Length: 216
Picture 1 (cartoon, rainbow, N blue to C red):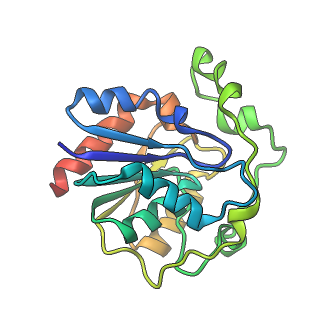
Picture 2: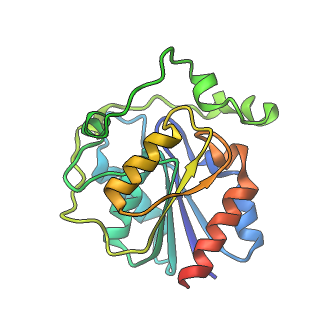
């Protein structure tokens, strides 16, 4: 049995993983879906990482999964707790010493224009799931975007990257370039947009379990 640590992105909560969690548990694993303090203007990246570490407690055999902005927290967790595998999903790929605020210009990311959150983020999410989204949206504080990633180098942990080919926020060509430049390998690809845990949970779990079997 492994422990999957699931870390959501900006302006969200652990509900993001609610379709993935039962599938991983049905496969015999423990799951920790973290709620980050994203609407707390006093909370920086250190608080995000500590929140995840506290939620993990004494659990072992960790597989840490970070979606979007959650990649920053996930990377910090891997530096602080023994971890078997790090998986980034439709994620930012942080560089050591780089803040989330710097990431946008450093990677030459272009925001969608016009920017309609429903069309950018939820265009492929099933209607019944999308209807529940507003209840789980939280105001994302700008506070953590000012904090540099407090690592001197990338964690010495096997790392995988899941690219979503229909992502309108981090387009596929952009992600392929950033992953190759920063991680030195080609990402794995799946169908779907920026929220694959809501739109394609079975495919995402299939990939996660394949990664687990490859390293454990």
